[in-house]
Image (tube, rainbow, N blue to C red; front, side, top):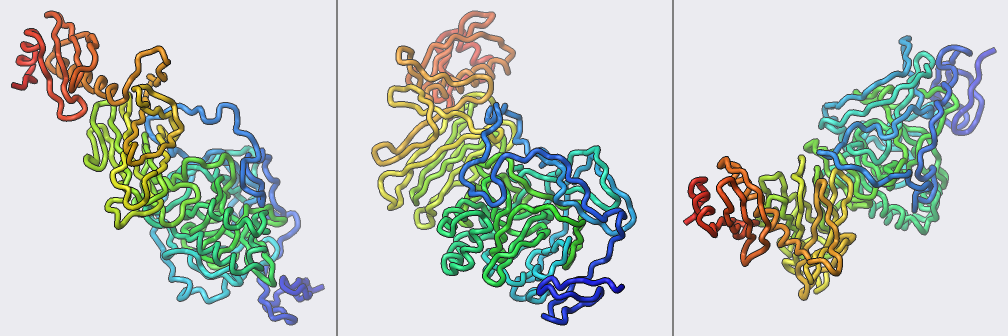
Length: 595
């Protein structure tokens, strides 16, 4: 008997090998029969993997569905920001079993997707694509088929016109490595398991410093103007249509850096229809707080995590030169992202930070061992500066210091080019020195934005937020969450944090108070004096004599006796004053005497 098939669009039976349905005219994708019991005839058993904490597919994304594990948030500092491998909770996933064509038998083991350097491939814009309109038609996929979606290739029956800004392109910079865990469970010949990668992993996604390749507001506007599509779009995400604006504004635009398996959704006959897809690296997508792709920017289609197939997948559609079914990834939810997504800058390859829910106009920030970020929400020119443990100050007047601190972003200067979503950012890209960091937030110019300017200050060490302390009017230090307000009556606020083994202890009501600025003088002055004497071969112990007008006084006990020194302006163009005969002799013999 001749084998029979069924039209995927209208359900009409047809003979095997028929290319076009005689009833509705739909194309019929040919599929090769698989012999019963042969390798690849059934999907390999799905490895047992504990479900990750976070939102289930389609759940309303407001809070995590499980509490953080014990000890979460109590990370220790590392010398550098560890992007590490993108393994996180990487595991082997049965939902992504790939059918490779050929006779080579493969079993899973310890594998690493190495750092890659891929030649950029920029396809024409959708309006002039070499792919004819409607070529990527997921409505005719057969059982077990997965659609390959190259960048810039138009979809049949999309939810909306493109909401991307600019043209998508395959990343051409070096990418972080992705280790894949090993498994002892062998898979049938021709099948490989796809790695799960946590959506919050540093360097998983890409972006640029000054532009996102997606416009969430354009997506919101379109859906609000098309209620039928809004209802279908919201249904995919498991939310009410009236919540679309809030939901999308909480998503973050990023760019895929690796070919990624998803469930895509087109719009047909007034409904969303799901289909399995692989999005080529370079696609612009919107991700939720867990880093899971939720929308495709080139067509507005809603996305959800992939689901298991009942047969081994067969990849259909236009293949790009670098396509390899063994290196597709699946992105899963673990812990939510709070301090921003760490992306690969697609123009330089360095790491940058994008706030959760950032719009295309938000400037991405550099990151490193230490990152201090100031954000506010009006057009005022507010300045951020930081005095490091050596007494050097980095800010708009001095953009870098010898300890490695640099001013990354200086916002809203001048006023006529100010933005309403500004940020200032100071980083130590490599290992920052231990000691006290004194942070100054100063209202430089209100720029017609009113008198009161709330802000949020954040300090991170190794990517982990640290406790900030506010200098109070009486000279004390009070623990704060970084929120504050500057105005004409209070134009400047001073904060501090300590890096290393020493931790700031807030002053008790009965204890002497400490001014962060004065403390910086103390630290800087002893550093200066100790280095001067050590360079001269003089060892000494020091007695702190306290603050004096314009500086700090120390007694240096040396083998020759007590030398009395005052270090004037220790955090600026310092000056050493010798206060007794021995101090004068040491200053002259060691070469730091200033007449």
